[in-house]
Image (spheres, rainbow, N blue to C red):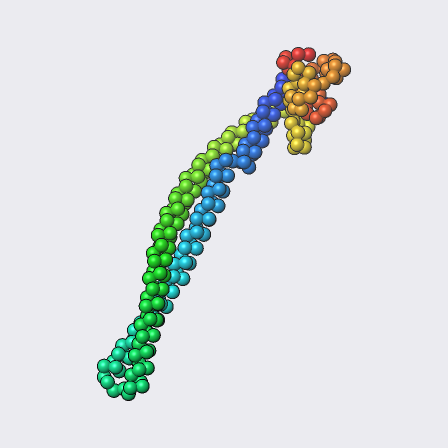
Length: 245
């Protein structure tokens, strides 16, 4: 394959644009701003779960409080009924003794229930404080996430601009190459290698392998318009004044 040396030299510009496009794509995959967003999303989920856990605990405690209050109220009503019977003096001696014994039991039961209620209410108050703290932590996490998403979006927008600029530069460059040369370049690049690179100081600029003297002699003797390939990586080797041939 033949191509004017000036056209071959422009392959270096094309390779530089393609290298920048590759760097842009790599940066998209490892974008620090995106990693920060993912970290904060996990943190927000953890804090939200913590807040929900406290909410469930509060609901359970509220249910316990209602249950204890109901039991205490039932005991009080029973006490009032028994006291009413005692006050009325309409019961016999045996029933009087039973009522007095029952009142003592009811009073002890009520005190136990009231102590339990105080304990649950104290736990409810502590849980409310924890819920307030968990809510503040969740709000902070959501604020941090919003800021991180904004920074991520700004970074992605910058990459989009850079990528579009490279695509425009590439489109402008590809028009100067013969179809056969461009096809060879693209085939090499899409195969995972560098499409073209400068030959400099006996080294291929793509694979950085130093060529032996015999190969250098063959390259030096080749016609300037002959398109040469690196014997190691198959990239198109571009010869310029910097090649030192």
